Length: 108
Image 1 (cartoon, rainbow, N blue to C red):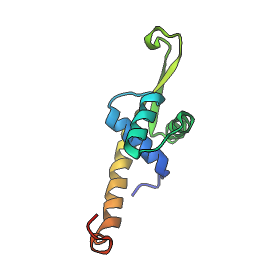
Image 2: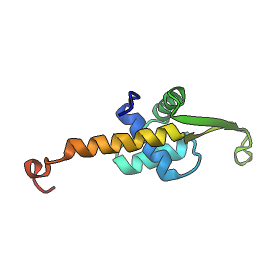
Image 3: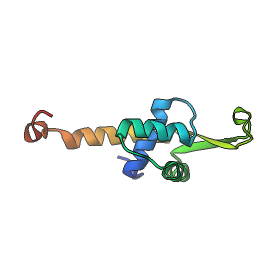
């Protein structure tokens, strides 16, 4: 297992990026996270997580100053290959942690 670690929210943001496909900026990620979790998500929290992921080498970004003619500059993010490898590792590790617990939790 990689020594790289992910905070829970960073994992959620990476998964939202994967679901969105390709590149994404923070607003669609906020909406996707709110839909999946059923709770409000602050855009600032998503942007902070995206910045942390970029510093960790798990996301890359680019600026686009032609965003729908609004004059606003948007930063688009996408997961790196390193992030995809880490997500696979995290998924396998979580699956191992859940093994054998269904009988203890009952069928939910």
